[in-house]
Structures are given as structure tokens and as C-alpha cells.
Image 1 (cartoon, helix red, strand yellow):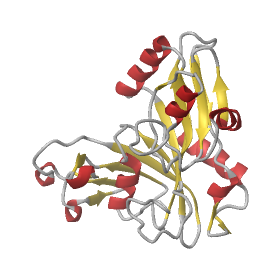
Image 2: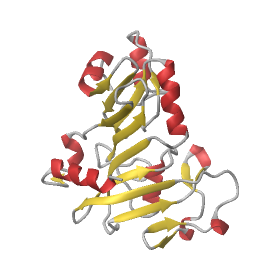
Image 3: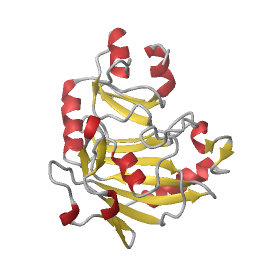
Image 4: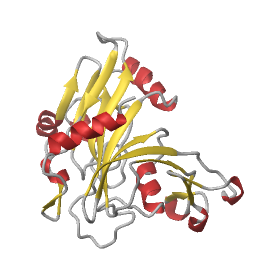
Length: 256
């Protein structure tokens, strides 16, 4: 992305204090560590700003990215991600219909050939019990695997697509993308599973984050990044006539 850091920082700013910087990242730019690609942390460093990523979202995913400006805050926040106490919510649009009002995907992940994330079981062993997708322990492949859980709620649906609010209870690489694809509901425009190249973006958005932050008053970071207008239209066809009402519905569905 041909964009100077100062411009990107200003345009995408969600929240900032002396310890952290939260941005609403556009799809198509990396957070950090991508080979052969300029990333946000590198762009900032080139302009003299040292940032420490608290978490990562994929290059193709838009939305909230939290970066620490000093190491004390970085340690406090990353521990919450490691302990799975950070509250995360995403929005996604699937290229499918027929999902229930609420569901749980309880499928372990593993890393296969060419470092590709996959379900740690044969596809045909995935079964649905009520509104939960799972595999039996006997079907889990030998080798290293990672228990992974994603909760979701259906927010809206058209004749071809479903809008979901999701809560990944674990934070594995590509978790939401792989979970949805392997149960037959891939995210629109996901390059891992859609080779047609017909969509300009992937319809997955990091929407909300809530973490403890003892340097703030009150001692919490409660962040929301609204998707841009492009997110609510696929191929020029709107998935909702009222994005504000959709987001309100999504927030209500994910409320404790």
C-alpha cells in the first residue's frame, strides 16, 4: 500500500494515549512480520515511531489493531491475549446461507504442508451436534494440534450471504477463516479458499476489543472499529439497508 505512515495513522486512528495506539487497519496492509511486504510497524519505525504489536490480524483482514508505545503496556496487554482473557469480536460475511441463529465451532487446528493451517482431522469426520461443529477424539490426526473454539451469531442474511458476529475464544492463526471454510461456510473473498479472484477484499473485520489497562481511568480499554462502507456491499449489492441497525444487532447478540 502506497501510503505514508502519518497519513495512515491519522486516517485510521481509533484511540491513543501515552501507552497505546489503536488503529482501524484497512484490508490489504500487514501489521508486522510479513516477508516481502511493507508492514505498519516498519512504516512507523521509518518515521521514528517505535511500536510493539499487542496482537496480529491477517493482511486481508480489516479492523482493530492494538499497538503499544511502551514495553510496560505491551507486557500487560499481551499477557491477556496469552491467557485468553482479552475479549475479541469480529464481523464476517460468508458466501453461504443456512447457518443457525447461534453456533459454536469446536475444531482443533494443525499446520499442514506449506505451513497451511487446517483442521486437525479429516473433513468427513466433522459432525454437527445441535448447533456445535466438532470431531471425535478418535478422529483427530496424530501430531501437534491446537484446541480452537469460535462462537458465532447470525446477524443478517440475504439469498446468497450471511453476516456473522464472531467471538474467537482461542486466538489461533487463521482460526475464523479455517473454521468457517471447513464447515462449508467460507468467508467471501478469502484467498485461502476462494481462488476465483472475483472479490476486491476479504469480508472479515476485527470489530471490538476489550482489555484491562491499569494506567487508564477507568482501568479498561474498550475499543470499537466500524467497518467502512465497502464492507456492507458485495459486488455492488448491499447486504443490509441499514448498517447502523446491523451493528447494533451484532452488539446485542454478543452481549454477555
